[in-house]
Image 1 (cartoon, rainbow, N blue to C red):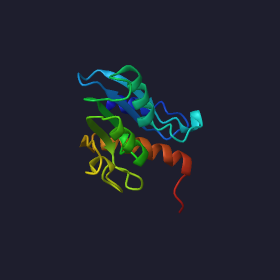
Image 2: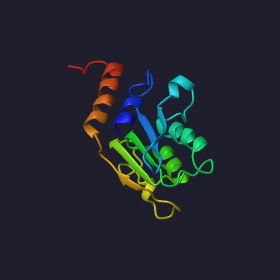
Image 3: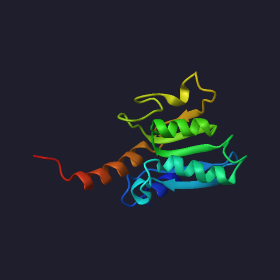
Image 4: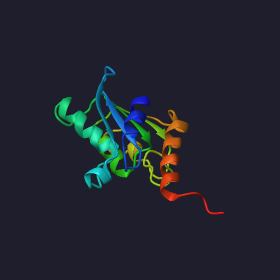
Amino acid sequence: MRAALDAARQAGADVPIGAVVLAPDGHLLASAHNAREELGDPTAHAEVLALRAAARDYGDGWRLDGCTLAVTVEPCTMCAGALVLARVARLVFGTWEPRTGAVGSLWDVVRDRRLNHRPEVVGGVLADECAALLAEFFAGHRGPPAE
């Protein structure tokens, strides 16, 4: 999760979310941060970018069997679907996202028994640090609270 936090801090104008993909032996395959603003791409979420980079260098080109995706925030529906399709073995995430989270908060895409793959999920890892990074970012974009 520390590597994902480091990636999140590189997000610049984007919401500071970071993701890393680890090989089954634990070595880092890919690291990414949100880049929607930077790339002008609505799908440029940290998870998607990290999965794409890892898939280029691992396995058969798209399956990430045995790999772990660690991300600072609970994945959205798009990202949860992508990690299921990539056959990621394990998802580790930091803070919960009650408005858009698709790993138990709003939806639970990754545990849907109708899908052909269900990764192991560990949530709440370094949650306070991950949440603080987001709070700091949004405080700077929304201004001080009204009195």
